[in-house]
Amino acid sequence: MSPLSVVSAIVQGIPECLAMVFLVYALLGLKVYPVRTVCLGLLLLSIIFVIRNSGAPFPAHTLFSLMMMSVVISTWERISLNRVFLAYACSVAVLVLVEQTLTRAVLSLMATRIGELSTQSLWYALAGLPHVVVIALIAWWLYRRGGIRLFKDMRPTEPPATVVESPVNNRSCRPEPIQWTKAVPSGGTRPPVVSIQKSQ
Image (tube, rainbow, N blue to C red; front, side):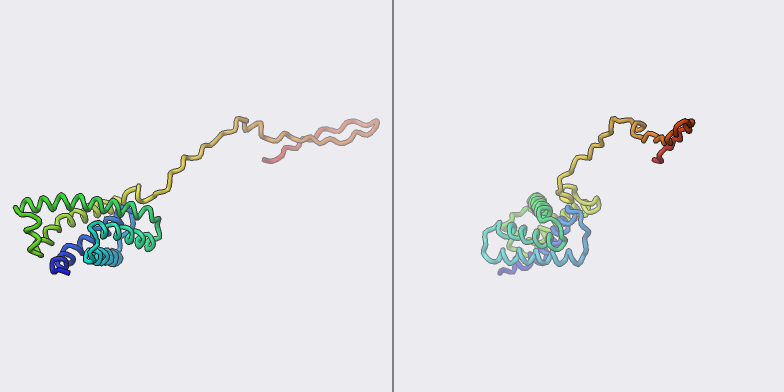
């Protein structure tokens, strides 16, 4: 474990992991709690730090943290694992794109190379902070607009139900009046017909 890795973990690693967790929550449209964000950020930093210093190949820490953090966030928030996995994968892609772009811009402004800058631990860590700020701003913008619909609801949308109107006229469905007649005695007169309308 070199002093460079320790300095990078403190100066750059902590803000970067916090920004990553914030971005995942912003994409999912979840409410952000400071304590929960800090706990998940420190967990992410611990996973990355241990795997990087264990001698594993380069993509190992990214893939392992992707799987672990997806399971943890899905269990903690009680939401679909597919949603979290896609949101986290998208966050990693955004992080890599912004990091590569801004790091090259910083190195170009400083007129130095990454190999020369790596000998100075503090400056090496500070050179990676601009992309952390950009990631945090993107996460804040997404959080303010309520997240991305693709990650908020993965269920397929059902077509609206079609209402079929009956071709029968409503008046034809009304009950006909019932006529009650009394029996006519022999040699008598026929009583009047009494009509009774059923109430609807």
